[in-house]
Length: 289
Image (tube, rainbow, N blue to C red; front, side, top):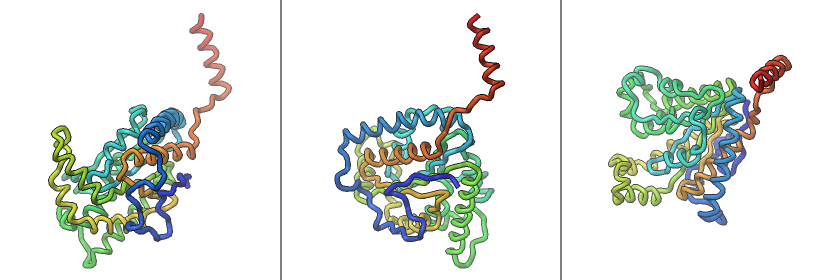
């Protein structure tokens, strides 16, 4: 089993997680904005150096799953944290409404196609967890999937959560470290951000009227998140519930988790054997000549 970062935001593995006890604001005494920006700069520089070794090492993959309610800052956080990485060793996949082809397969299928290969950092902006979050809150979404739903719908969610656990265990055993982040925004902070999108012409394009409609299901979504995190936060694929009301603080926490994860994996540049060293020595002499 691959090592995972320790953090105050780690969701315990003992089914004790409660969404109403998880904060949305930074803890008292947190650094100010300038200090957070400087820390993020330091962490992204460290992440860039680790990624070089990680790609050259090529023994492991890193999959980061980012889940959140609307306006929690997923896109901006992904951009801010990954800004210095080599695109050849990093891939970001966003999942929206399933296509017809995706609906013709099991619910894991569309995400499996985008899993990162060894040596690559992959980020899922939403993921297979939508099937136990959005679909659980809106069970009418099951209609287009054309599956047999048990008389007790709770059985379906239990089956899917079990499938996710087993899939993530398989990934861990196969060399992929899976880190899962719930960027937890408060209801009042979300209201302010949605309103800002409406009032700022340069941000109107980000506004979706459905986001306001979804606020009516706030409690349902939090209950679904709680059930999902309880059922799937495991040592082979831990969840981290990161406060999202302060974007600078959130981004630092996310960057630190990625840096800690790569440092635990301890990627190294490949060693050359004697024959390879001799070959390169001869090539150096030829090029110098």
